[in-house]
Amino acid sequence: MTAPRLAVVTIVRDRHAHLAGQVLGLRDQDRSPDSYVVVAIDDPAAHDVVRELAPAEWDVRTPVTHLRQGRLPLSAARNLGAATAVSAGAEHLVFLDVDCIPSPTLVRRYGEVLADAPGGGGPRVACGDVAYEPPPSAPGAGAGAGADGRPRHHPARPPLPASAIRAVDDVSLFWSLSFAVTARDFTRVGGFDEDYLGYGAEDTDFGQRLARSGGQLLFVGGAGAVHQYHPSPSPPVQHVADIVVNANVFADKWGWWPMQTWLEQFRDRGLVHRRLDGRWETNDGAAPGPDGPGAAPAPLEGAARGQATSRTTSTLPRVALE
Picture 1 (cartoon, rainbow, N blue to C red):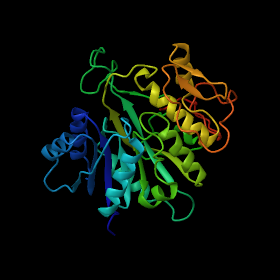
Picture 2 (spheres, rainbow, N blue to C red):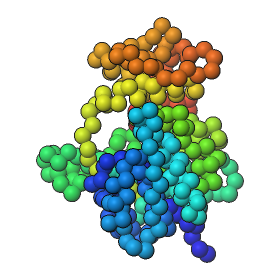
Picture 3 (cartoon, helix red, strand yellow):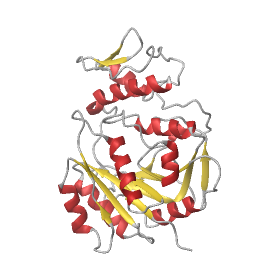
Picture 4 (cartoon, rainbow, N blue to C red):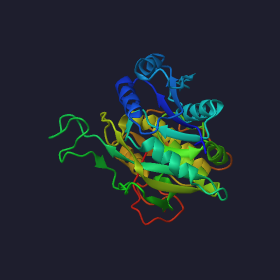
């Protein structure tokens, strides 16, 4: 029986060295993707990187999209990548952040998990573990190695044995760095909400859409990736305007606040404040995001402080994953 066609989808703007690392990782797979979709956001040179490094026999698709209101349309770009993959005949979709280098078994393992999914029930989304490459200046660093010779894992996303699959109740632990879904289930979830522009909350929103559709989040072993290092301050002050706007969009829709620790840290630094209606706003007067239908949400101090929480229960620690 022929395996369903599988496409790897990534979106890129400027990170060409990281994109090259991903292409080389895909060349080293024990099962090659049937299509490789690279969505460039106002970055035509990214496609030159792929054409130079991808084997001639690969089916490479290179859609383009553009900044919206000067901001990265991450949700729309992922949706475009999915649509392009499906038009190329893909039944299985693997999404990789451009910073991620896949382990040699990632494509095969994701394909196995999706092929074994039961026919009935709600949508299923599989997430492999991602380990973070340390700064190049770290002791023992180099070739993705940490001080102990290994990349570090996020505490909420421990590595699993290669054959393991773990169902996760807390859908807020979904992140888009590395995940796989059938084309049918991506449609059932509704894809990514394109109301989010720039950095923050679109992942948490996708997890809520998955839960609303009766779906299930799975952590899977054997589909690991290494996130290539790039500097990023904590909290991510370079994204403060996007985070404020997107947090308000999310709260209007779902009734609770994502990224709450970051918002509070921004407030403590004098970058943002709470309005009387409970919404967040930047202190430079930037708009707090489009008002949703009806009244703005009340301040949600009952939500777990600082965590990307959901209304579901989990035995895993609640850690902001945006």
